[in-house]
Length: 89
Image 1 (cartoon, one colour):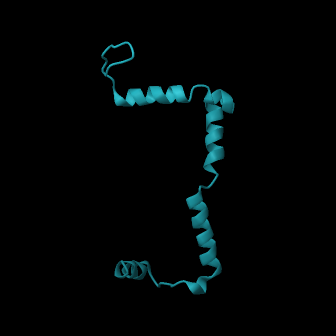
Image 2 (cartoon, rainbow, N blue to C red; image 1 turned 90 degrees about the vertical axis):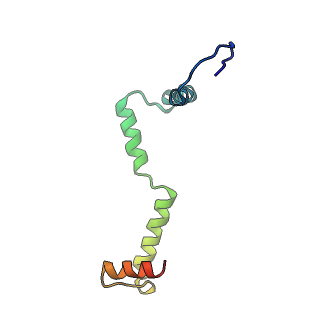
Image 3 (cartoon, rainbow, N blue to C red; image 1 turned 180 degrees about the vertical axis):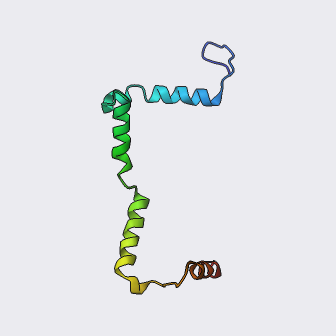
């Protein structure tokens, strides 16, 4: 690869991507108030408890099924449900 100084260098794609990410995220931790590993863990704990759109949709579907059981087919065993799934596939 030829750089801006007309020098030829060999670069590893992973290290190049890491450098770009480091540049892009430079100062982000300070802006977020993250100063140490405990702050990082607190941020992870906080975000982990927030369901994403797919999880919210699934939980809503579960509530719908729970509240309207008569609208859904029931099975006597897992094998019966599995057989029905393959029959309709």
